Image 1 (cartoon, helix red, strand yellow):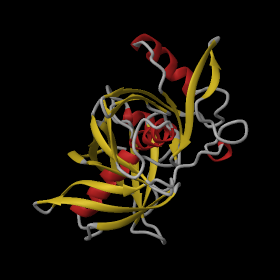
Image 2 (tube, rainbow, N blue to C red):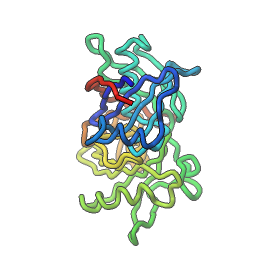
Image 3 (cartoon, rainbow, N blue to C red):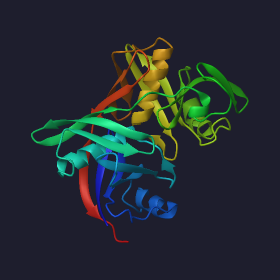
Length: 276
């Protein structure tokens, strides 16, 4: 099985062309491939398949074997692959996901894609759409974990996110990440973003659902910019800078919350072949 290794700000993926829709997807296989000591090593596998509505379909399998609805860093990597190998010979393309079709503009330098701007669609704030137990929005809401109260905002960018702006120590962040991911309020678990402000930059640490602590999370950066906009900490209708351990993304949340556009890099690392 041929594969390519890509990353977006250090959020790394095994990318496979799955034209015949016959590639293995059982959790044991995914965990084996993504293992960083005995496998290729990755935060997930991205299968590129055919699609009737768009130029391609992206399927996202997390390193723990679970499936995600959407992956912001991953879709930039898939767009780069589609452009560089002329599978979609256009700087404008559409990629379908479990969260619907995303419109993409590829950034090209010397004939090679170096990044992309992705229209991630409108954020979902109603708990039923996240999904999250309860009714209405969860903005600066309180939830209990391990006997303490944490304040956060829940946003879906096709997958669930809980964004925390509280001042917490590094030890508290490390402890709370995996606990909040599996909080009982989130029936499908949740990604967790811990945010602090440095001047006008949103600095984010991400505990990613199904992958753990990651260098970057594209949908998490989008959800963070939405939550910050709702709190008045970041501008709506203008570019916001979101800094993750692996680097920065530019996020533009429409003033009416009708769309979120993400701009960032994509890098191909190497090509290989898996012995099945």
